Length: 87
Image (cartoon, rainbow, N blue to C red; front, side):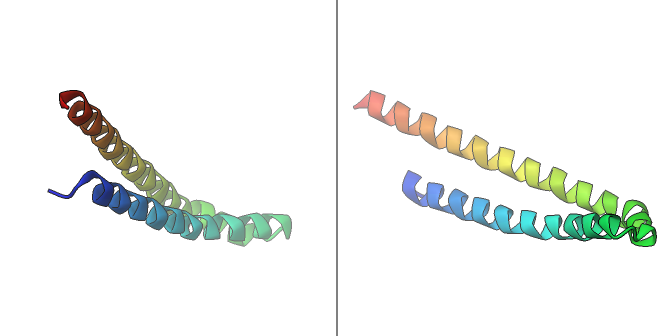
């Protein structure tokens, strides 16, 4: 098994990837906000009817992945405390 530092680095990389994923999820939201401001109701309606579910699913997926990373980091922390207590 990887040592704790390697595993923490792996989890940090996952968080970086999730931050990039969030930027991609934000793009259609920015577009629909501009469309709303420009009173382009057809673009807003299209987003609400065709894209909103996809954005919501992506956000839920990102939340779940962040929770998984948090769980791994807590486990690493607890393992480290346990090892230090055994010394």
